[in-house]
Image 1 (cartoon, rainbow, N blue to C red):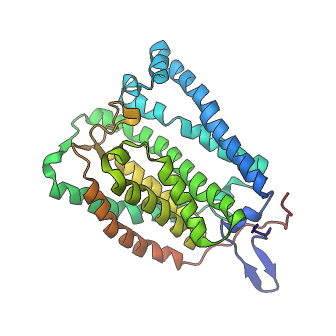
Image 2 (spheres, one colour):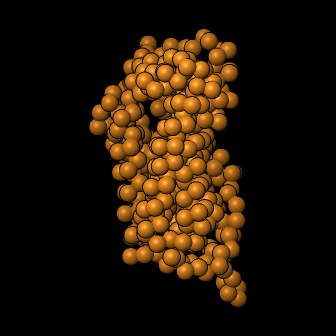
Image 3 (cartoon, rainbow, N blue to C red):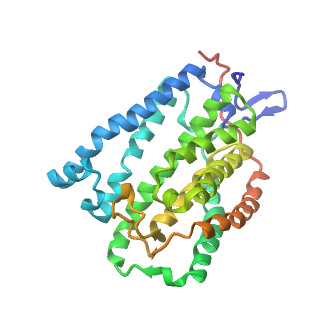
Length: 330
C-alpha cells in the first residue's frame, strides 16, 4: 500500500487540514524506488565518502601520526577529545547524505523529516530534552550512585572537562539529530510507503536501531537486557511511538540529545571506549562497572514518567502545517 500524495495546510472554506511528518512522505517524489536510491546515497556518502575524508581530516589536525592512528582504529592515540571527535566524524557525512537524498531525490524540504509545519518548534525539542533528562539522570544516574557509590569516581581534570563541553555539545547534537532524521524520519517515512500501519511503523526503526547498535561496548557488557531495554525498547520503540503520536520528531530529537549528552558529560563507564580502544569521554564521573540489570529496570520507571511529562505536549494545539501543492509522486 502506497501512501497518497497529500496537501499540507489546506483550507476549504473554514476547514483546515494539518498533516503529520509521516504523511509528509507523500510530498514531492515518493515512489518506493526513490527511497531505495536514497538509502544508497545516504550510506555511500556516510560510509564511503566519510571513510575517505575522516583520515584526511585527522591528517590535517595531527599529521602522519594521527592518520596512522585512525587507519588502525586507535582513537586513543588522538587523545580524549581528538578520539571523541574523530570517531563521530562520520555522522557529519551521514547527515549530508540524508540532506542530499531528501532534497534532490525526493525534492522536498529536509524539515519534513521533522515536521509538516511551517517551521521546527525548538521549544518542543527543549521540552523533549527536559522530559527525558530529568527523570533519566535522577533515576538511572543518581539512583545508581546511591546503590553502588563505591563504583563512582570523580574526574578532577576540570580544565579538560571545560574545554570538552562545547565540543561535546556540538558533536553529540550532530550525532543524535542525524540518527533521529534517519531512523525516526527517513526510515519511518519510507516504511509508510509500504504500509501505513502504526505498529509496523513503530517496529521497523526499533529493530533496525537495535541491530545497528549491537557492536556498542554496552551491548556486549549488558547482554540481552541492554539490547532489549536500552536499544530496542528505549529509544527504538518508545521514542518512535512518541513521534507517531505527536506527529513530529521534535520531542525525539530533544530526548535523544538529552540521553547522549548526559552519557558524554556526566557519567561514563570505564573501559567502554570507542572501537574497543581506551578512549572515554572526560565525563564528570566514571563508574567502574556497568550495572545492566539496574539500568534496564530503571527504564520501567523512567519511561512512564517521561510519557507523563510528554503527554502535556500532545494536548497542546499544534501550529499550522506548511503549505504544499498537490504533487503526483514519480
